[in-house]
Length: 167
Image (cartoon, rainbow, N blue to C red; front, side, top):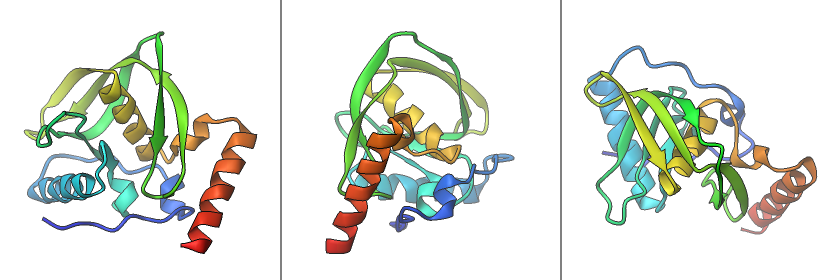
């Protein structure tokens, strides 16, 4: 397993939709292993492959109290989202030093290819749902701050850029 470096904002790969995964191979499993190790080292609750420069629809999420419960997903898609919303502070290692409170559906049903390569539908609630939706956004070329108003988005990106110049 290898820790992978993060693609820095505003790299165009963070705005490019990732390619679908045709099937689960040993190569895909190795990428997932690297993603879990990289996510755990952040420490973070999820990671999408484009965040580390791999332009495939792969994501991992682990919101468990103790690590080691990562859900590995290929080609995840939301089938159903609850009408009830949940607010949570989100951030990204691709744009370090800033965060914003984002409102997303509190629960989602997601279909994806699991580690065995079979389609699976799973319900995610609370923090798990927030993280899964955050990763699916990355796979579509979107960032969490795209959910903000244009003014708040500009302020957040500007603040991150200033922090980056100092750091």
